[in-house]
Image 1 (cartoon, rainbow, N blue to C red):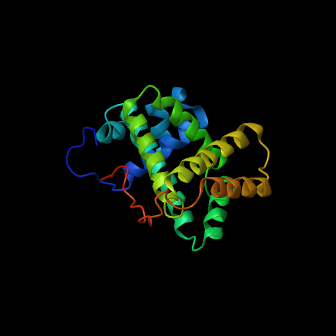
Image 2: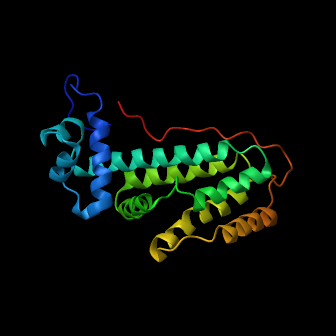
Length: 207
């Protein structure tokens, strides 16, 4: 991690508070409206604390988005790892699309901001690509690689439409569509080999 840290921080949770505060400010005011002063006020820390951990606003935003993506990936992975049957796996995908625990309205706001910022920041773009890869690895616990790509597009795209339309999704329609994709593309790899359970790899580590 970048930053001008010297010595040992007095509050080991301060860094997480700053990142959480950054995400709150981004969700409220957007990336363009995010400032050091707003972040420090939200986190309840001295303004100088930010330069203690991070090298400027771009560095703060990069680590905040990486932290956000990692937390989203954790929910994604847990939801899929709890599935025990083929039907459970499809139901897990439906839950990721329609349920309250993944891609909430606030999450979607942050995703929009992250994607836009990633177009101009290579580090954020790298974290975003890693997030996509982690999502597909989690889906590969149950589905073939090609099916994973199609399902991940549904999991990403449908909540985006919901965010703009501001209407609940039709869970029955979502379930029917997920089943149709799985049936059409298939569950197994084309060569019929068993798929190993996909490993989960960290996006970043905060100290």
